[in-house]
Length: 269
View 1 (cartoon, rainbow, N blue to C red):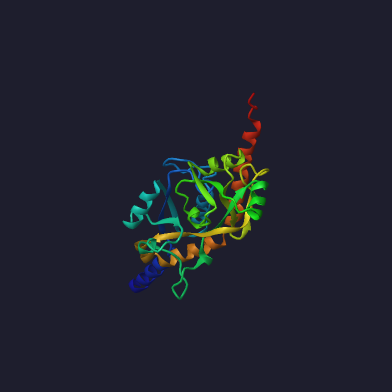
View 2: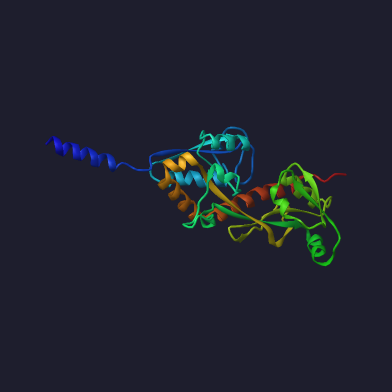
């Protein structure tokens, strides 16, 4: 009788959810719309951003998984990931990051882009005149580029003169006012063309994208070591999420507000 009770206890234990785990996800305390909305330490309760909505969905769908969100400056997130104070961030692949981040890989050890959360393509953006002159002239063009925008490094054409701006919205605004010729902007998500830009009536993307990057959910090495099955399941589930559809819905809503605000402004006299 005692032996039966012991066996029953063992089976009861192993039948518990194997994924009973909290994952601490760190992301920027600045707004990076539409991936991350709002500023500061709090996670917005309504429309927190596409990337946060994705992870909140995973927390509901995967039994035993709880995701805790922490907002910090980006460099602090990386610092804390190295020291296992947080468990995961969303990041693009860089060789130096692979020293302390775990990215999804194939059986042969190559980066598995099929398990990326997103694939972003970036294009030159401007009005119709800019589009025509790109094709027909060899003159130089002034491009408004947000400071620290790493994708700009892929623009190696000497015709482009880069003008720093504080934000992407500032860059679009300067292009719309014809202060500069163009800018660069997101034009493709997971293979789908993006049609929603600020000032969409005037600005267009020049295809194909000149730069493509993948965003991955990456884990600290300790978290992955202790929760490999969970980590792999989460990658698989994220790859199935309709990220592009939700992202473009956010974009369309955000840019409609911008365009409406511009239209509603009284004209100067």
